Amino acid sequence: MTWVREYSWSEHLRVIAPARDRSRIFYCALPFLPKHAEPGDRLYIVYHGHVQGWIEIDKFCHEFFDRNYNHHVGSFVGITGPFHHIHELIPMRGFQGWRYFNGSP
Image 1 (cartoon, rainbow, N blue to C red):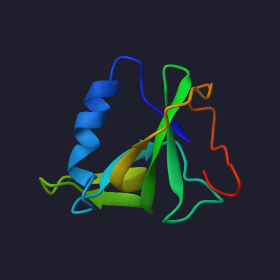
Image 2: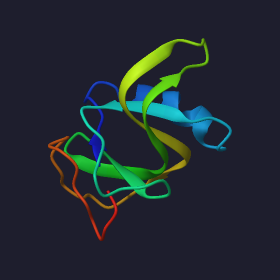
Image 3: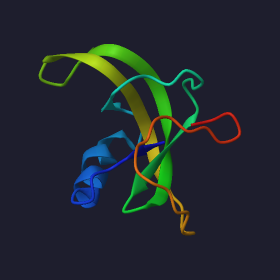
Image 4: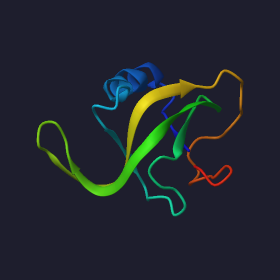
């Protein structure tokens, strides 16, 4: 589970949109990688105090090159595929570390 800053939800959806057909991977920087997640699991997104939906995890890495060949080093999760909105209100605080539901983040 990760979070999006309160002022940037529409920007977040715009940025991840090219990954929806799985032709691209969008990388999110993280403070650390989860211990109990793997590619194919779901990454749930929290915004404004509620779970908004999920997107599939493609990979975890400590470095990647972006479209402009800039080298990035750190902890990253690569996400791809369509964003699946959740329409019920599930209250959740923003990023407080990794949380797992039924074995998936």
